Amino acid sequence: MLESEVSMCFIFYSTLLILKMFIIAIITGQVRLRKKAFANAEDAVRHGGVQYCRTDSYVDRCLRAHRNDMENIFPFLFLGAVYSMTGPSYTVARIHFLIFFLGRVVHSVAYLLALKAPTRSLAYVIAQVPCVSMAIQILMAVASFA
Amino acid sequence: MLESEVSMCFIFYSTLLILKMFIIAIITGQVRLRKKAFANAEDAVRHGGVQYCRTDSYVDRCLRAHRNDMENIFPFLFLGAVYSMTGPSYTVARIHFLIFFLGRVVHSVAYLLALKAPTRSLAYVIAQVPCVSMAIQILMAVASFA
Amino acid sequence: MLESEVSMCFIFYSTLLILKMFIIAIITGQVRLRKKAFANAEDAVRHGGVQYCRTDSYVDRCLRAHRNDMENIFPFLFLGAVYSMTGPSYTVARIHFLIFFLGRVVHSVAYLLALKAPTRSLAYVIAQVPCVSMAIQILMAVASFA
Image (cartoon, rainbow over all chains, first blue to last red; front, side, top):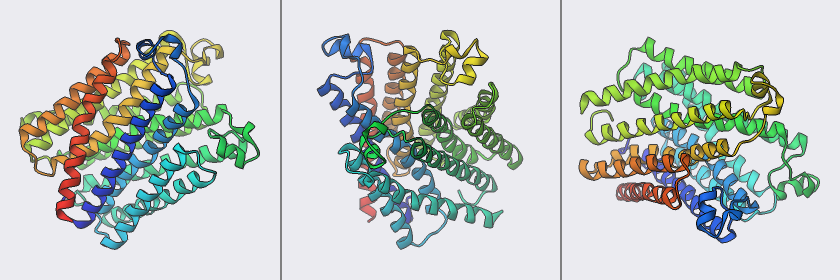
């Protein structure tokens, strides 16, 4: 897998997107500390008292951004890996990965900064296009073997 | 990986299940629009006013169905890929993948249509059986090398 | 992939962590039954009445533990698989996998038993170290090919 240019390109963008997800987790933690809004009583007690075991709208926003990443980036890790093995042209494959990568970065920025709708939804839809395209190409490749 | 019949079969059902998850995401979005129940103020404002930034019990149901898919289908993507490399018989492997696939499709239908209990729970348990079976076979295969 | 010692070691710990996640799902279900706190009306009706369609703080805790696993263990499945293909030394790779594995087991125990802070957060941070380390090594390996 580490020998093809397409796989390399896929791994590069995938790893960056996973790091992006880790950054959202770090931001969520920092917002919890700054706003004193903890999900667990034991954390609240450590940071001032059980009254800080409470929700916060911006923490919820971070959690939604993170969850949406899980819903979309994890499937990409599978689809991209299999698609890379179907022997696509490097240029076409790179366009797939790059659109997904940029779409998801814009999605996160739009979510965390609460940019005017439909910026975030548009980024989500654009990032889904290469995913659906890869899924269809995978199904066709598998069907041709069957 | 794209050379064995077992892998092909695994990739076929996995890709269909990912598309099934994408469909749940689309349904969630459509329900949000129809019921005017948005998670984010910026979306609500675009669709009539900030008062539509609110929860809805059917949206929550869609989110739970999607989350349960993440909890179960993502592990399957890993277990199935590794299991396919342990050299199982095609017939036995196909039965594993097919049971999981059918179980998860029934689970989604039962969730979204709120079918009478325990339809959904039963589908969940049935789909878990091939996952646990594959996990055990993987551990035995790895142990035999160690 | 099933031929290298590093991959074997990765697959061993990954499969155990997936089983650990399945156990959290089982615990969640048992707590729902024991506390009569169901997310869906159809489940509540089957177990005594629609009034049991309600939240429970310990069920919520189980769900958070499970979600945190998804946020961290699923990326590990990708990072570990790719890292295993970059040709690391067995000893160094095993240390990466073992630290992540132990960190995540402690995280789950600390979450479910509500251990005094910062036990859980510390386990989370420790488990993230090998993930970030693998991500960096993957990016360097890919960059050297590019």
